[in-house]
Structure formats: C-alpha cells, structure tokens
Length: 346
Image (cartoon, rainbow, N blue to C red; front, top):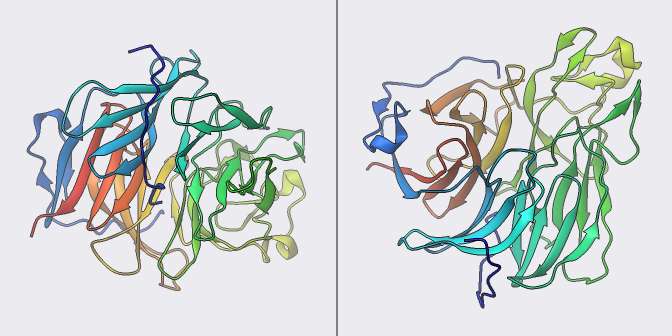
C-alpha cells in the first residue's frame, strides 16, 4: 500500500567478542521460513509477522507492530513506517518516501523517525515536523531511537572524519525532550564511530553497541558493547575497540587509558545492530550481529574485560533489532522480512 493512512492509534513507547562461544546443542528451528536457523536448547523461535521488506527498528504494542522498513534498495528513498498485526491482514502505511529509516519510536501518541540524516516527529499518519536535519553521518545511516527512563529520546550521529579531524557533531549520542515541541538535541556522550543501538538495564546502566568500520593504523577495529555514562568521551578516532591506541589519529596510552573499556568485543564488521536485556537469565544482554547472522548473549555484571559471549540463535538472515517484552524477545530479521519471537521452550 502506497497511500498515507490516518490512524487513530494508542501505541506504547518502545520497550525500549571475540571470546569463547559457549553455545550448547542447538536445535533445528522448525518453521521452514527460518531456513537453516538453529536455536539454543531450552529456547524456541516463532515467526509472528512476515512479508516485510528490510525491517529495521520496530515498536511493539500487544499484537501490533509499528515497523520502519527500507522497502527497496538501500539508497532508493522508498522507506516506510507501517503498522502491521501479528493476527494478519494488510499493513497500514503511516509514512512513506523515507530515506533509509533506521529508527522509530512512539512517545505519547507521537511518531518519531530517524532517517539517513534527519530526525522528524509528528502525529501518527499526520504532518511531520523536522526536529533536526543535515545530521553528520558515515555516508550510510544513523542508528536507532531509544526512550530513556527519564523520558528523553536518545539517538546517535555516526562518525565521520576529514583527515584526522572528526566532523563537527558526528560520532556522538544526543538526547531530545519529546515533551517540548521546540526541543533541540543536547549532546549526551561523544567518541563513537557508530553507537547504533542502545538499551537501559534494570540497574539503570545505558549500554550501546559500537560499530567501528574502517581501518586504523591499517588494521580493522573490533565491534563492541560498552556502558555509557553521560558526558563521557569514548575515544574514537584516537582509541578504537577495547581501548586500542590509534597512532595515525594522535592516540596515546594516556588518553586511551581514560576511555571506558568494552564489556564485549566482536570480530571486525560483525555489525551489532540490536541490543536488549535478556528475559531468560539475570544480568545478561542479548546482541544481534547483522553480518554474523546470529544473536548472542553476554553477562553485563562480570568484571572480566571483555566477557565471553555465547550464541543463542544462529544462521538467521540478518537479525536487526531486538525488543524485550515480558518474557519474550522480538527480533526483526532484515533479510527474510520477518519479525520473530524468541521465547522459553519450558
């Protein structure tokens, strides 16, 4: 459907490593739409929505999903935000003609969308207001939108450089106050190549995934999960990965020793696009690794640096976003156009 729909909806706010792989005895997924995917013993994966085209972030409200999707080629500017039900039926297009939407949130009935270089807000199905545009980025996209416990909306600008200098405003996390119709973004933290996805755990710690694409001193950098405190510099491009010094950009042992360490690291270009708090075991985070086609688990309270990770689900077709709702985790699978539910098999 290409027409713009006017929908009167009440939608909830989005609920919002290199290391030893400890997966045990994965079981073959039963739904044929999942291909060769397998899941750790004690868990199951079910398809709840299909027929999407490049789904990225989504919001869950009971059986309804508000989904951002690319809806074509990466650079075709045909992106949409749609409403779709797990009960079936045709999707309702809320907004279309978007340029690479990677972030979506619903706050007090208002729809927020992050595109390639702009953040907009507006009523569901209604006229949209540009909050900020011409955002600096890595040439491809920004990341997701996350509602913090205090009500602020968190987003990132992906990192961009001119020579050894960071482009002003890039590689940072920002917040905006949805309660203020004229609110402007305020910087939250800096020093990220691409702090793509975020979650706040039960103890109030903000975690972000970090994609460090490119080469530094002619070596690729690992991707990672890091804890973020407001006002902290995370070091990019002077320090990458788990506090690795980058000589070509003026890094130093003194500077990189002050940068927060990685809770977990992943191979270069693993591409962690989603993170959620696990409902299956305490003090555990789940991370979607887009290029590695798997969802992994890691402990958030261990002091080992970095902690080991284990695979929960493997051989998906580009898992993208994770949302924990009650005892379940919902997953957008970009390649297959599915929304999945990961739950306990007990």
